[in-house]
Length: 205
Length: 307
Image (cartoon, rainbow over all chains, first blue to last red; front, top):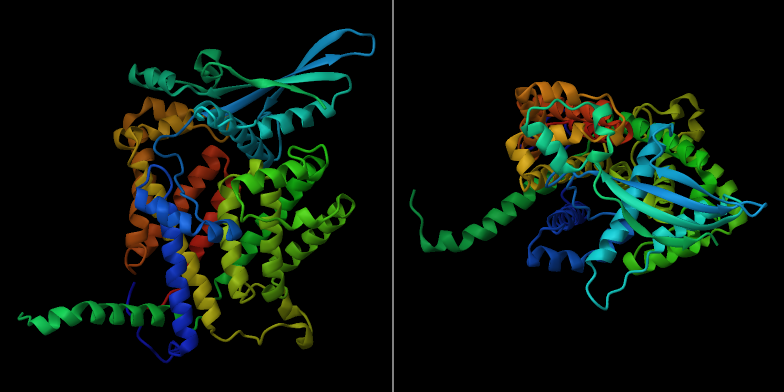
């Protein structure tokens, strides 16, 4: 920050109670968002404890993000496949699949939101898997999304959600180390997917 | 230099007092804030675009059989974000569509620079409430947009330039023309500048935890993410290790050094050039146009400057 020199074109700064309050308020705000950024994992106990004091501020104003984009390493994308079990009016059973994200989605902002949805479902599943004994996490998001899909299809009996991630980092790393030049078409091969896991079977209603 | 015990004891208080005076002078020197007009216009157009996209999936966002019904969204928020709130919680289902349409009109008014002191806070309320209504659909664009909208809203700025108000009769205008320098415009610029430094600093330093950002291969992992559906540079990076390393290290060090060098008058043009170049690359190769344009708009805050 450069020192400010008042010139004829630059009005003089205020030096009143109001300007003191502005200076203190902005300074506090800056410290609070810095603490929020420092408290994202991995972080120190001190940063976490301080950030906990300002949770209300962060949540009311939607601040306090860690801004750790693609850190510590670019992560593969979660892809959700929903398998709908449908019983037709004639009693025959059939299955339909829905992929999230649907690559044909346009405009692209809607595709980005589908990526966020798949990521949120993966995140919920990961929290369930990592929860210790006695900390059961209900699959709220997965159940709501399955219900949303099921209600759109007449005769839907159940929806099973699956997740895999793409591309598997170790496969990309192996290709890169061996000097193999990958193409997007080559990446579509199933061998670049992580193993598929089931998020559960959910009723349509 | 000779120091006596008295000076050592008074040094901390003198330092704090001196730096606070500089900080206050920097924050409260009135500014024209003419650059806030283009920033508001870009953010406003992006908000219009965002609103139109939400409208395409309206029933999925707000319907009773949507991606996350209202009751589930409220329960989820109460358990994860107890201080979070959304105005949509109070809106009966039958009124959601008319209010959504009215919200679009307010966003258009704000984008046009109309009564920004009043329309700005409403646009932020709409954005915040909508994002909290469906938190499972959010990504970086929503987060940075919310922050930058907040700063324009709390300072009541954005209408300093590029506003339709100048075409209206005098009695419908909210400010004198041309606008006088104000403290609120200065505070808005400073808040945008400081927050950008926090974003880039945190983004850059956190990458140093990962091996691919040291080995120069991170750009390859990003390009290999075929779901982004942007302009692919995967093959070019795979064929050239120096290009791969360059595509990793240039954005990494731009982010790390941004909070340090952007305050220096000589380095500022280069830092802004690199940051804007980084965002345009992210937009074209990863398809993250909305996020990138939002960040580019905020970077304009560094164009209006005085030393």
